[in-house]
Image 1 (cartoon, rainbow, N blue to C red):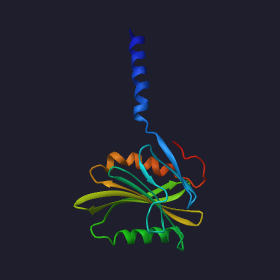
Image 2 (image 1 turned 120 degrees about the horizontal axis):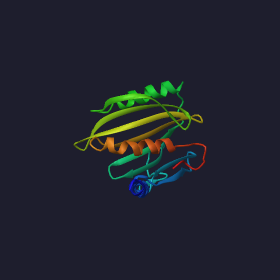
Image 3 (image 1 turned 30 degrees about the horizontal axis):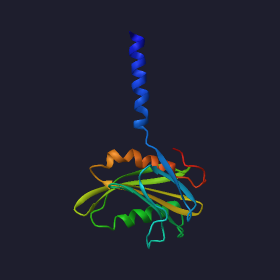
Image 4 (image 1 turned 60 degrees about the horizontal axis):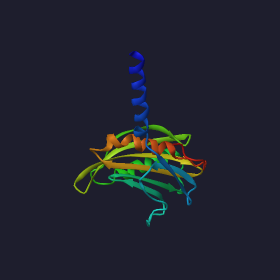
Length: 172
């Protein structure tokens, strides 16, 4: 009887795993030489139709957006870049920084800000990762509505962790 229950439990777990695992698809930016992965089914513009020369790739699914930007401006240091971005985002009306800290992206030190901002009568929330790689300064900007942020955050984190300049296949 115990063996039958254990076997049934294994079968249930086995068939549940594919439903829990999101399939990710890698995209390579031909302009900036990086790869990043998004869940299958996300709309990806690579390169995006934009007049902003620093925007290299954008993706969305429903209310969730991810932008990757690359700047080749000169900053004295990564800390100078981080402080400049912090002061720039606070220029927008209604933006609040909710948290900040250190991380790692593509095996280099990174910094992140969680922030909220009003958009079209709704409160939005995002996380912005900053890092420097190959003499460029990157931002990975992930945002969605404030009410769905916590549910989407694990997907945002997986997207950011997939970023690589090594041009190898981004991990799934």
